[in-house]
Amino acid sequence: MSGSSESPIEAVPAGWRLPGIANLHSHAFQRAMAGLAERQTDPADSFWTWRETMYRMAARFDPDSLHAVASQLYVEMLEAGYTTVCEFHYLHHAPDGRPYATPTAMSDALVAAARETGIRLTLLPVLYMTGGFDGRPLNERQKRFGHEVDGYLRLFNALHAQQDEMLRVGCALHSLRAVPADAMREALAALPADARIHIHVAEQVGEVQDCIAVRDLRPVEWLLKNADVDARWTLVHATHLNDWEVAGVARSGATVAICPTTEANLGDGLFRLRDYLDAGGAWGLGSDSHISVSPVEELRWLEYGQRLHSRRRNIAVAATSPSVGATLLQGVLASAAQATGFAATDDVVVLDGDSPLLAGATAQDVADRWLFSGNRPAVREVRVAGRRVVAEGRHPNRDAVATRYATMLRDRLLG
Ligand SMILES: [Zn+2]
Image 1 (cartoon, rainbow, N blue to C red):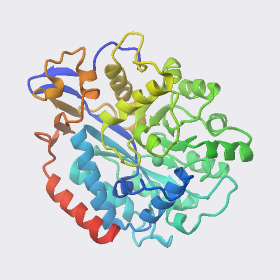
Image 2 (image 1 turned 180 degrees about the vertical axis):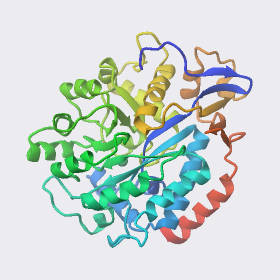
Image 3 (image 1 turned 135 degrees about the vertical axis):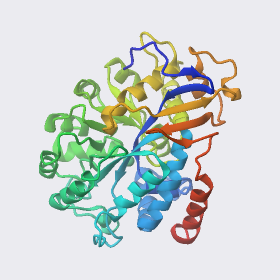
C-alpha cells in the first residue's frame, strides 16, 4: 500500500493516465449548502452549530431536489477524476418522519442520478436511531433519518437486490451515538457477507468525551473491542485516535476515510497521518460535505495539514517512494476496492498532456505536478465501465444538469 515505488500514473498519447479515484464519503444533499455556513452566528461556532444549518437544509429536500443536486455533484466529481462515490445516505423519509409511499424514494433519486451521470455508486443506507449516547429519541429535525432495525433491513434488502455492475449496496451506521450497541449487533448479523460497513467515528472531541462518559471507552477503542472490525469496514474521519487506536485500526485492515477539506471546514482536527502510515494502515478520501469536489485539493490539504502541524515538509512518503504525490495517490487507489465493494475496475482518468501544470512532466514527477501546482483542472477524459463520461474536460450533460440544479436551488431549496 504505502510501500510501492511505482507511480500510479503512466504516459499515454493524450497525456497521463491513472485509475479512477474512489470518493469514499459523500452526503450529496450537502452540496446545496456549500458556502452557506461561513458567517459567524456565535463566537463559539463549531461543528454543532454548523449541524443546525445542515438540518435546516436537509428538511427542504424531496426526491426531485435530491436528484437534481446529486446529479450536479456527480458531474462535478467525474470531471474532477472521481469515478466511484460512496453515498452515506440518511435522508430516508419525508420531513415529518413518515416514510414515502415508495420507501426507497430518496435512495432511488441517488441511484438515478448516478446512473444518468455515469458514476459508480456504493449506496450506504444509514441506520440512525438515537440522538445521543444516552439513547435519547431523535429530535424533530432528525425524524426523517430514523429507522428501527427491522425497517432498516427491509430498506437495505430492497436496495441490495438492485446491485449490478454500477451499483453496490452496503451498510452505514451513522455513528456510535446514533446506534445503540444491541441494535448495531442485530443489524450487522443480518447483513450479507459482501456488504461493506461504513461508520462516522471520532470526528469531534465532544463525541469522544460523550462515549467515554457512557461506554467507558473512547469510540474507536469501543468499536474495535465490540465489533469484528476488518477489511469490510470503513471508519469515516477517525480524527481523534490514541496510540493504541492507531495501531488497532491499522491492524484490523479497515480503511479510514479521511475528509481533509470538510474536517478543516468543520474544525474537527487533524488525522494522525504519519503515525497511521507507519502502522501500515489503509486509507482513502471523502469529499463529505462537498465544500470542495476535487481529489487534488483533498490530497493537497491532507499533506499541508501535516506540514503546518509538524513544521516540516514532505510528510506522506513511503520507504520506497520519496514522492508525496505518488505516495498519496497509491494510498487512495489501494483502498478503493475494499472500501467501495467494486472489485478492481478498468475505470480511467486521463490528465491533459497539454496542460501548463504538466509541461515537461516525467513519470517520476507527474503526480507531484498534478497535486501541487495550481488550480487549473487537468482532467481531460474519464471512462467508467467503458463509457466515456468526460471528454475535453466536460461531462456531456454538464450544462443541462447545471441549469436544473440552479433552478432547484433558487426556487425550492433557498427560496
Ligand atoms: Zn459524513
